[in-house]
Amino acid sequence: MNGIRTKLRIDAIFKTIVFFFTIVSVVALAAILIFTLLKAIPLFQEVNLIDFITSDVWSPSTNQFGIASFIVASVLTTILACLIGIPIGLYTAIFISEIAPKKIASLVLFAVEILASIPSVIYGFFGLTVMVPLVQQLFNIRSGTTLFTASIILALMILPTVVSLSTSALKAVPKTIDEGSLALGATKMQTILKTKIPYAKSGILTSCLLGLGRALGETMAVMLVAGNANMMPQLFPISEAYLSSGRTLTGNIIMELAYASGIHEAALFATGVVLFIFVCIINIVILRVKKRGVAHS
Amino acid sequence: MEEIKFDVKNLNLFYGDFQALKNLNIEIKANRVTALIGPSGCGKSTFLRTLNRMNDLVDGVKTNGEIRMDGKNILSDKVNTIELRTKVGMVFQKPNPFPMSIYDNIAYGPRCQGIKDKKVLDELVESSLKAAALWDDVKDRLNKNAMGMSGGQQQRLCIARAIAMKPEVILMDEPTSALDPIATQKIEELIDVLKKEYTILIVTHSMQQASRVSDDTAFFLLGEIVEFDTTLNIFSNPKNKKTEEYITGRFG
Ligand SMILES: Nc1ncnc2c1ncn2[C@@H]1O[C@H](COP(=O)(O)OP(=O)(O)OP(=O)(O)O)[C@@H](O)[C@H]1O
Ligand SMILES: [Mg+2]
Image (cartoon, rainbow over all chains, first blue to last red):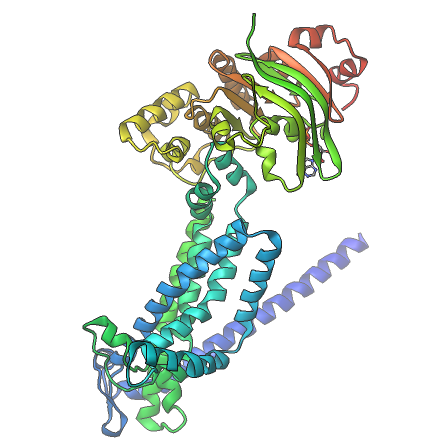
């Protein structure tokens, strides 16, 4: 009797602690959100939201605040980073979980985890000293600080997310599924492509979306290599856009926050709100994908 | 005179240092149902998986001896395991449909062999599902995900999937142990029909099942085949004392 009562009490204490920390994190998130929103409000007394998003003139000195060019730069770098990083990441995940001998697999996984723990300023530094001169020479352009360079660095940075999460998604596929496929005379490659990947689909998709979120939100490294020019990239041909300097949403905030005040400051917070909305959309999609994954298994 | 499908000679199998199969000698006859019985861990599944070389997937497995299938040693390095597995199908203990439509599950094996013709696949899907007594249940929802079927239906789907390869042999490792009695009965009836066309080996822990569905029975103990005879003889007149003890439930 006594034992059960003690156990119930421990249970209750544990629940209270868990509840407390949950509240702390929820409150922290809410506080950040509310603070950012409040700080952004003054801007919308001057500029309406549509203009803010669609205008590409950002000129704090004349009170003109449009972030279209930053949105374009963010979207361009994120897309290219994903186009490069996701396939490489997926192939690496398949290599690690399916093909490589155990020792090599754990070595590669170890390397990937190291990649994940490098601070972003180091990526930026590497980009600045290695990638920027390389891009400059390769394309014979005036400056190597371009959206293309930023995309390459971002591709590198999202690799660990894509690789490690996709690897665990693939490893979580039950052995009976592999065996079912192989027993039907499928080759190892057919088994991976036609059964394991579909089975791990939601986990793999989630890893890609998280990678995408990381690319969108990355600040320091991008700022160091993108050039941060405050103008709309020329979109046609698209290569022109990538080979020009550009400023992303995150780059815009970090470049000007230190000295901004008044409505200028509000505009930077509003930039943050837009970024936040993008991230929210990505997370909602992730939740959807996960739910679907649970439903089918 | 019955045709011999598998002629196993001096078969030994090691998992690392552990010998799981000890000098097995057995002749499996074509178009009959052979039951493999014996206590847990005696090597029934291991033996079954040598017949389609599924043990190749396990690290550190060593096999020696011979398994002649229609005269050809399938343990030889030269054997194409992919081709072997198209001839020797397998049904597992737990139904393991792929997370795709019923149609795609059945078409999976043929497609892996390069069959793309829609008409050929349609026919294969229909005939395989009919052969597995599943056609009437699912003909209106071939495009639904197979994960939504009942356990018994899933297992019959797995049988249909194996049949779609037009195999010569079907290996079944405790195919009904995850199913309720009614689903079990359906599978047993199915086995009875299928043996006309296929050679079937079935691992089972149920003595009743072995006596109901099989023509021959092999009794395994600690990696050895203690006794192999017609099911009738094994159950009515076992020669070995261990066999008798096992089938009467005194141990195991
Ligand atoms: N992958 C493996 N690695 C090492 N040992 C194994 C492996 N698979 C099976 N064994 C061992 O080989 C022996 C035979 O196993 P097997 O699975 O063939 O038995 P079984 O007769 O099918 O048993 P059950 O009725 O429980 O399914 C057991 O002692 C088991 O522990
Ligand atoms: Mg077994």
